Each structure stands twice: as structure tokens, then as C-alpha cells.
Length: 71
Image 1 (cartoon, helix red, strand yellow):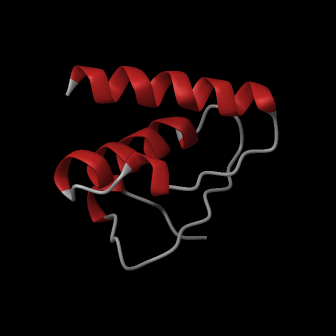
Image 2: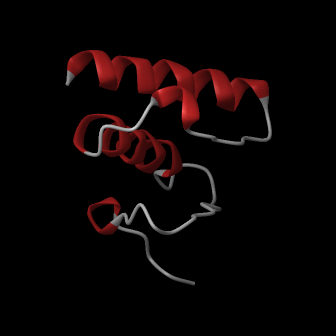
């Protein structure tokens, strides 16, 4: 298993984030999207994030929206 640090996020790689509850998956995904949109000027509508539940998708959308509106 490799420890993921969002500071090392590389646009040229694909990522699968799989971990137990409470390990920071949502935080890392939000930070990756923020980097893509604000630092690398990527279109938010061209980013694909797949989750297993509608609840998880809703939480991600909410947190991403909050983060992008803040920064």
C-alpha cells in the first residue's frame, strides 16, 4: 500500500483512493479537485469522481462546492 499525500498529486497519473471510513478520502479528493481547478485551471465539468453511494456523492459535491467558493 502507498501512502498518498495530496501535495504530491500529479496530473499525469490516475488515482484510485480506497480506504476505511475516517481516513481522509473525502478531504484528499476535495484538495485534488481544488488543485485541478484553481492551480491547474482545469474545467470542473471535465473531472470524473466515482463513489459507491449517493450519500458519498452528495457529501463530495457539497465539500467541493464549499472549498471552491472559499478559495
